[in-house]
Length: 248
Ligand code: PGA
Image (cartoon, rainbow, N blue to C red; front, side, top):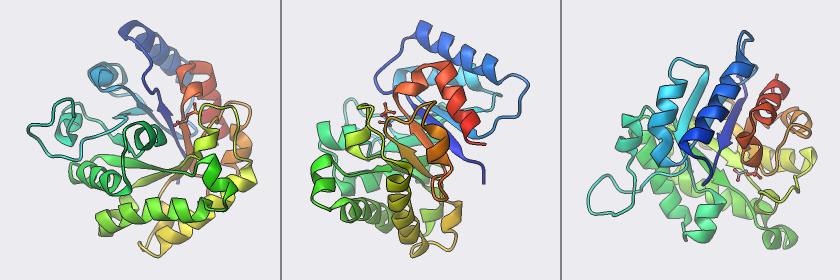
């Protein structure tokens, strides 16, 4: 299975900046067979732009969230069907910034994952502990609880999700989990997937949290780290491509 390197632009970008960034990435990829599967997850208004820029390229695109509702009176929400209109392959769900700043619960995140899958969009389900939870030895319990809610909701489709382990204390802080720390949690998640699906090895489990060009190779060398969810470093073409190259 090829590794998956997914960029999460968060609330960054502009028409002009996105075009320059994507063109630089595509230029950098020219000729070489990509070492990993790739995706870029952009703010919703830019999905049409990504579709136009990336169609026919080796880079897929996706959203950073999706509504738990199908359609109707939900001002500000973006439905899975709308994402599908723009050929999104992925939708991040349950990013810690959504859990933290927008009060998203495990059940809501699970419903979002379900909505995405129902429309043929792969949810990238984020799980991860806060610093306080790690210090209280709650890491395993927290990530298992977060993943269990999604497994419960998507049931026989569990092998179709992507999981991203993102320790909250490592996101945007420059503090990365060591490869061993990350692997330990990834192994726990793999075991949990194994109890829910016949093909746990088919589920990409990404690591996210200050992954960059310098630390990617050692993280991606771990047996249960199947790729990365890249925030800051996905805003620089050269850094993103170095991470992709490290996935070989
Ligand atoms: P970071 O973000 O790479 O900037 O730490 C990762 C994420 O939040 O997905």
